[in-house]
Structure formats: C-alpha cells, structure tokens
Image 1 (cartoon, helix red, strand yellow):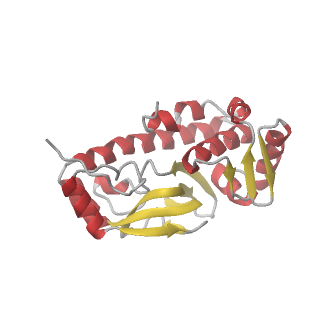
Image 2: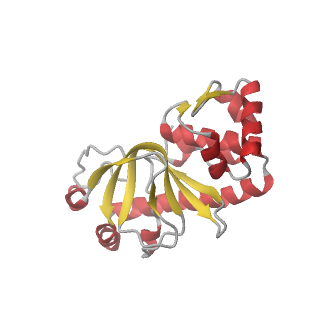
Length: 235
C-alpha cells in the first residue's frame, strides 16, 4: 500500500505525492515569488525550470512576430505552467507571464523529466492536467474567433477570479487587452458595459467582481465548458 504524505504545497499536482516522489521533487525544488508581469519563460526557448503555482495566476500567451499577444490558457494552483516536459520537450511553445502575483514551486526541468520517465503517480497527474490545458487552448481558439469583446472579457475575468480565489483583481486595462485580444478601446468599452450592468466595478489598476451571476450571464459559453471547479474535481 502506498504511503501518502502531506506536503505544505498548495499546488494540486504536488500535494499528497507519495514519499518517494515527494522526496525527489522537494530535494531540488525552490519556493519563489511570482512578480506581476514577469516573464518566467519565453516562447521558442528552452526553459531550465518547471513552475507549479501555489498562489497567484500565470498566463500562457501566444505571440506574433509583430508583438501582438493573446492568452491561450490560464494556470493557477491546480496545475503547472509547462506541459511541454510531459512530451519530452524543453522548448516552450508559449510565453509564460505572471498575471496575478503569488508564489510557485520551481523545479529543474531535468528532475521533472526523470520523474515523468518513472511513470509514477506524478506522471499520471501531469497527463490528466495536460488534457485540461489542451481543452483550454482549443476553446480559446473558438472564443477568440466567434465571441465579442464583452463575452470574452467576462469569461476571462471569471476564469482568473476562480484561480486567484478572489473577486478583487489587480489588473490594468492595457494588460487585460493583451490577454483577451483586441484593441484596448474595445476592452475599455466592454468593461464599461459590464460595470453598467452591475457585474463589475473598477478603478485604476483594480477590477472588482460585484455580482458573479450577472458576470456569468454575460460571458460566452466557453466559461461553462471550462469550469474551474469541474476541471479540478471540486464538488
């Protein structure tokens, strides 16, 4: 019978690993701060570390040669910022940016790769989470193609709030426009409509979700398809 150990990690993938895997991982791990707006991994470059958030929110961001950006997936303490390692790759397909500051467990990529090769419970958890990330990326493509700025903004705020475990989000309109996609003016107009409906309020650098139900009503159905509590198995 496998003996489970309780770790101090608030990351769902790392919490409750068996004694062997926990010992291997934490012997090489570091607890680090995640600073707002920090790029912790760049697209098309090798990443020496894998990041498991324990607080805060990370964004996986697609980029163009012209500098345009759009978020393709969001990661909180339910997951890991790099799923490339699971497929034996060390090159990040996306930029990883800190959206909401917090903390993360940082583990050298070679350690994670070896643990994956051992095919233990840690590997199975990563495979399960990879399916969630693939679903997010696919649904983001649908959302960005077919839904308007207000729907996308409402969906994005809900997904971010779920992972931040807070209805107060320290975010600027400029940053949101980079994540949601589209010009800043469109995001500002969408935010004004959401505020007028009573779903949110905002002042410089801070957005408050005042009524979750109203915000859900105005979000596209992509949010329901990617519900955070269902993804992580919360009743």
